[in-house]
Structure formats: C-alpha cells, structure tokens
Length: 440
Ligand code: HSE
Image (cartoon, rainbow, N blue to C red; front, side, top):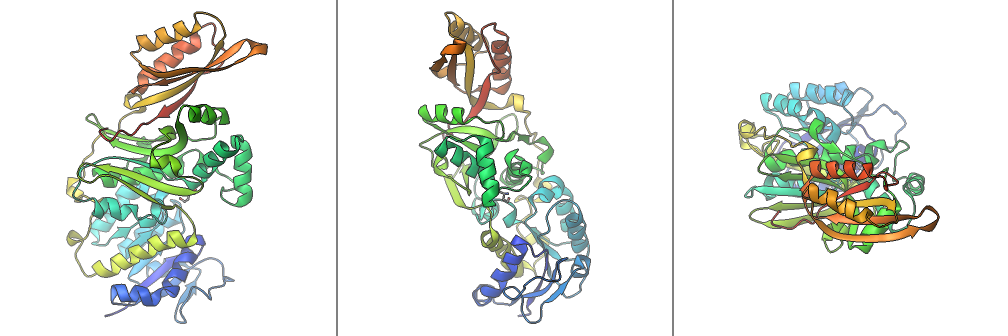
C-alpha cells in the first residue's frame, strides 16, 4: 500500500517526541497499519536541531510551516506549535488544502473547535486530538468509541499535572502554595509563568473538550467556571484530611435535568475514592456512564513520549480511515454533527455541591448558634462540624463545617450573611466537596 506522508509542524517537546516515536517504532507501527507512516517533512524555526533520533534520510526540514501544509505529497499535518495564533491559521490552511490534521492543541480546540470541525466536515477531512487531553491517557478514544453504547452521566478528572504536583506536595510537607510552586519551577514541572496551569485554564480546556464528547454539545469554553489553586492554604488541606477528605483540582462536567455543569475548581473528595490517591504529576479521568458504570483512566498527563504516543495513535487511526468518506468516520465530537445539541451550560449559582467552610469567629457563646441559624435559613444541612482550635491572643476560634449538597447560590448567600455577623473576624474560606455517589 502507498505510504502515508506526514508533515510535523513544531519540533518542540511533543513534536520532537512524535518524530522519535515514528522513527523508533516504525516497524511495529507498520505491522499494525499495513502501510508505512513516513515522515516526509517537518517545520521548525531552529536550523541547528539535532534530528538524528527523529528523521529518516528522506525527511525534509524547513522553517516554513506553510510549505508543509501546502505540499501536495503530504496526507496528514501534525500541528504541535500550540496556541490560537499561527497554529489556527496553519490548521485551517491544511484543511482547505484537503489534509487531515492531528493536533495536541487543547486551547485552540476548546476556544475555536466549533469553527475548525465545521471547516473539516466541509472539506471531508478529519481533525484528531487524542493528545489534547490528559497526554498519554487514551481518553478521547474512550469517550468517542469505547463508551459509545452509553449515556454518559458525569466526568471528573485530575487533568493538570502541575497543580496536582503542587497539591500533593502541600499535603505531604505541609508547605505553603508559594513554597511548593517555587520548588515545582526549580524542578521544571511548572512554567516560569504558571498562570495557565495553576488558575485552571489548562484543565478548563480539557474538561470543555471532554464535555462535548460526552454529551454531544458544542465546545463551550467561555461558559466553563474556572477557579485555580493559588489561594489555597495548607491549613485547609490538613483540616479536610482530618475529616477524611483530600483536596484535588478537578475538572467536572455533569449532565443534570436543567443543563450541563462545566467547572474547574479545588475540590474535596473522600480519601477512599481512587481519585484521591492520584498524586504528583499524574492524571486520572473518572467517567460514569449508565451501562458500564464507573471507569477510571490513569496515566501520564504530559511528557515527551507519553504525549507523542497519543499523537502517533491518531496518525495510525487516520492511516486506516483515510480512504473512507467523512460520513463513515467517527464524528469529531462523537455524535453526528446534525445531532449535536446546544444543551445549556449551567451558571455556577445553579450548580449543586457539598461545601467545606472555615470560619474564624470570636470564641464566645452564641456565635455558633448564629451561624447555624443562617445555614438553616438557607436550608443548608450540616454534615459535620468541628472547632479546630482557639488562637488565645486573639480570642478567636476556627470552626470547620461540612455541608450536605446544596445549590451554590444558597451557600453564597449564607457566606455573605455569616461575614456580616459582628463576631466573624475574617472572610469565610469555602471549598467545594464532591462525594461522587454513583447514583449522582
Ligand atoms: N501543563 C499541563 C499539566 C500539561 O501540567 O498537566 C499539558 O497539558
């Protein structure tokens, strides 16, 4: 069979890794595909790259990425530049030229994917993106194909390794967020500008993509609630642990009767849940679906070869479907484009969750009764309540309350009222809590 010619745009960590995997495992891959996957061209601005482990003798390196997307011999363009600028232009140009595309660009797909997939359908080509979510974990294929018999109910994922590393270290060492972030930067786990990872944007892109695949809805990143980990206090991790909970940055999406929940925020989960044991830079995605029940998918969420493994799997899939018509391929968002429904994404006020509250209050009679009255007025039921200690010099007590499930608007109203009480000395700390009972 005719070889499939691949052109890689960007030979950074993932692009270089992809070239290495294609070269190192060429024979094994060909045993699977029945045809050669040939690295035909690659584009990178750097002319001094060591491509010894990457290229075949016939591979051409250029600094002009547009030459790759327009080359008549290229079948598949692999975009590994990232971002929504030149990468978007290149992908749209490749599609216009009738090329299939593989990308790891979660930001581009979460923010502009509706436009990109529409362009691809128009041109009868496919855009594959396994590497965009959770690196080496084949979660896109799982959601699109493996779980195709199911009505998916919810997904909860640890999908940002940097944040998970920071929270794991804060818990183990009792260190502050700032101390652990500095350590993560020293080790190369966190970027010099870590905003994208620690403020939930990266996880937001990933959960947005998974929500579309799970529920057959358009990509809705602008409606995804984002709250990061930078304001967390190691004290709350310790208190929650004493109550049997672990703190994780989760991406959560859930189908409810009134709409879709789509959110990223620090979340307390019972320590007995498997997700609570996912530590360090590892990722895990928990999917709950009506027929199969719960499945948990664990692995490396980043890294040169783990992410390249996902990119190459997409190239292999494309090589098998390249001669078919779009109508016979797996749809981009798992459901037929005409059946994608614009189910509303719920505003955060409508989302239901349990809550952890830490309240700093004067250590005197009646304070607890006032707090309990406010919670009762908002119909919020208390699951557990404990006083963590008294700061003698300030005559202040720290009260920790866990609530049963309630709507976010009620907890917000209760917190506002508690903060108005004369004996409350600091803003109330609030962390969402999910038990993940499987009948949710
Ligand atoms: N920066 C991401 C993380 C990996 O920390 O998990 C790429 O999405």
